[in-house]
Length: 470
Ligand SMILES: NC(=O)c1ccc[n+]([C@@H]2O[C@H](COP(=O)([O-])OP(=O)(O)OC[C@H]3O[C@@H](n4cnc5c(N)ncnc54)[C@H](O)[C@@H]3O)[C@@H](O)[C@H]2O)c1
Image (cartoon, rainbow, N blue to C red; front, side):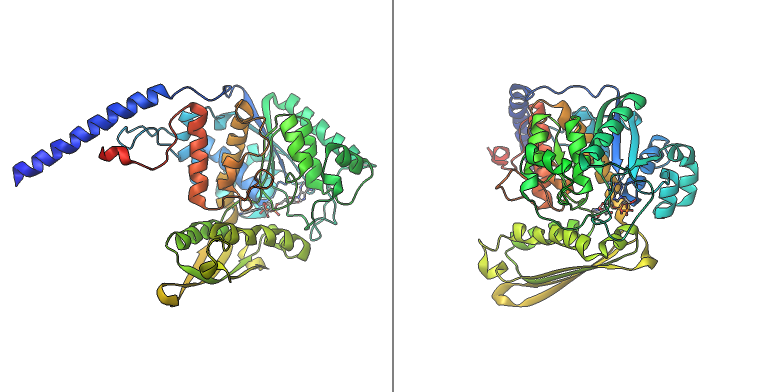
């Protein structure tokens, strides 16, 4: 018996050696990078419209990590690895060692907000982070003060503030934002910039003629067209300055032909929309499991209570509709009722968000899921996620900042416009016109890591794995 075990072990060892040799040869032959990738030299300037709970939790977090006070938990760029070659190769570098990302020490920040609070005051008001941590970061956070915002109360009905730009036309406001961008580039000494929308959710609108081309958009800016939302003016200003733009809210913002055109023309990558943080993260993990096992779904009722400013803004029906659309799209795309009518052809899907001040940023999201199995027998699943909204969002912001900057430095990505490989981070991922989005979190992760492998000329991982049994 002992001898049999020994010889079996020897056999396995031989298989591994054989596979290693084959895959080593393969990785050697395929490690030619696709395109060029400029190094991350100099400072990266991060510009944030909306210095609220998410933005301050992100910036405070970066500073806490730089000071060695905390760890970047939840961040793929900081803690994640990417497997290269065969399972037997033992090559799994950290993402940040595999591709040239900006280091946290090189990040510098600015932002815009309708309130005059600096980042220390805004973070204190948001109430996400412990005051003892904030005290240690106070000098740094106090130094980040908001620039005057481009704001339109009609788009965010529940709030109003004094720190707002004035201009005769929306084009004047866009020019002022462009001037802010140029000023920050100069005064911060940043060699590269990116813009990350962390502003409030704007009222629901649909694209119009004004959003179809650069010409019609610029005409609409000059004529103060009411269909141009403030977030679009920030996006236009950024893209005109060649600065990549990410959209953390569910607003249309860059999801428009005009923005896609500007993004491609000026090689300023775009991505969005709506950070995938709590309830939708769970949805895009559970729904693929049901589909994988061909379990049917009859209903999914999701409700939330939250008490932060985001919750207050979403209490307005116009802003809620924007969020609702973003949250509802997920199931249909994952479950594909057209392909599986008996399982997913008749789903009751409801999403509610209730503003409940006592909870602050600590949201509670409940899901009641009615599924059915073998012979149609019904079952139920209940999820109660007591999460912290901005704690989940901050690492997403960090990863997007670093990956968008990488995209701008990669010849294979910067002219593409939409960065679909960053779908992993969004509730409503942007795609090329006519393409349905991938919502399954694990497909999204594979897409992201395969994109990194592709850029570096590494073999893509397909999980076929037959070669292990040759
Ligand atoms: N987990 C999450 O926290 C999460 C997940 C997905 C999406 N989001 C979205 O991210 C955004 C930020 O969330 P938050 O919790 O930080 O909200 P928040 O209310 O704390 O912060 C938003 C800030 O944006 C400012 N603002 C609004 N309009 C502006 C404008 N035109 N220009 C400049 N500033 C403007 C507000 O004054 C406020 O300070 C929201 O749209 C939210 O829906 C958050």
